[in-house]
Image (cartoon, rainbow, N blue to C red; front, side, top):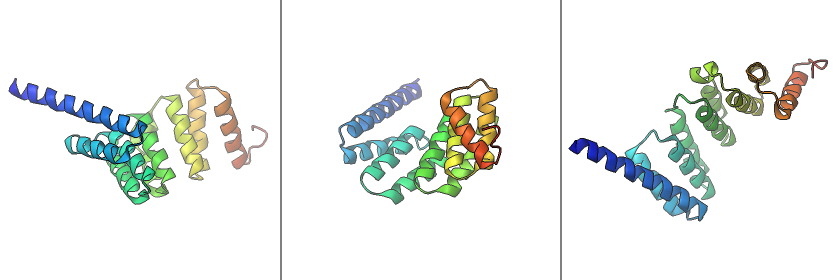
Length: 169
């Protein structure tokens, strides 16, 4: 149980660092936020949220390459969570890491998801990568899974136009 107490203490420390990092971002104390997230990542290297927020801190400080490195590290340790996978792909695309974004979007868990909102978000990233042939089927799957809103209809109509299917648009 000594080990259990140690683990509980580490979890509490990690939660405190996570909260402190977010608080520092809100207060625009970016050096402090960077330090907290770096400490957290030394404890939990696969902490996706810390990795992505640290990338955001690097961007806020004008360090795009460091932001890309953190986001690429996140891409190497993707969880089995479709929304998290899409968030990493979005971040990679925004940083110009298009090949890495494409690779993340090919993750088997994302391919198998039945989360229509995650599919729509993935379709938006595909569209931003000019991967229209991949975006439309994702939108069709989201529609088939029950997501039907103006956002989906609008972007699906754009995809249909890209595919020359004007009558369906």
